[in-house]
Image (cartoon, rainbow, N blue to C red; front, side):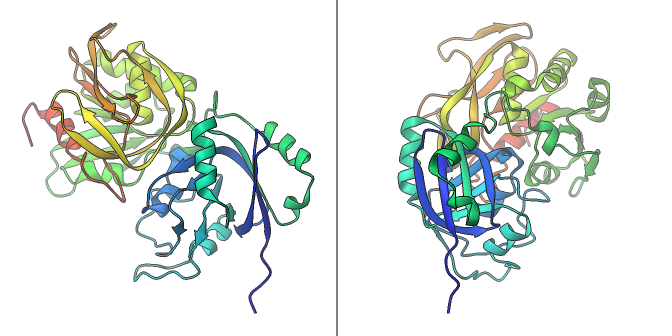
Length: 376
């Protein structure tokens, strides 16, 4: 006889409530409610530090069928504040699986809600925008609705959130080059994913992963051939130290490559503003066009903020001319920047893309070219 379901509520700050069943850890969790459109890669999503502060709703209805393994995590822990699915798989069937999704959520204290209409939640967020949410399971779900909504309204907003210090590495470490050591790069860890330095190591790059608090002098000393700024969580307007570091790199003339949060930091360093998107881009099926070639890549995204740069002209900045290099074909959001007078470029998406897609991995080759002056 199966145990009785645990009562659970998904409570949005605008008062909309969805009833479901608890899975994972029992208790209460708060965060920004966002939806992820990926049909695969839930383990990579859970362990992506960029999701710090967010409750992730998976739009694919069946999640957990391949369990959890020890090879695919993008970091050492789960970073999402909470996890919401329609139908969690009752079994884990994969030769690499070591634990079920439910067991892993329980072990790491992550509150989950299942059995809700994730399609309705997604439509609600798409129309009204990402907003704060509370997950209440077990005894916590028995409180009056007005009490629950008040708790959600008292929780922190993503606007003004500074989470980089929570997710960055406490100490520097080195990812050695695979095969011949060709180049040495310093990677500023703003919430870096494990696959990112691996993609560079595959190209003969020794990667020095450095804490976000690193000084400009050490960043430039370690990054003999180039500097990389990673993805990360929170509001880029709070990342003043990282922005100052980016300016130091631009002034040095050292090749620079940034992704996701790193794109937003480059934008700030160049003098552009950033703003919060209505509901953001999250998933592995986002079409992005390279404006120079017309090529369209299907790309992996996780961002709720974007760079406010003009699409219709080349901008003059303190570091020379800059153009918007990539745009999202869904909404014309800036998806990349290219400096024309210094060796710096960035994209808003994830070219390392585990579990995929892999259309944009050539950007790492472009980074190599910017450091060597020749193609790969």
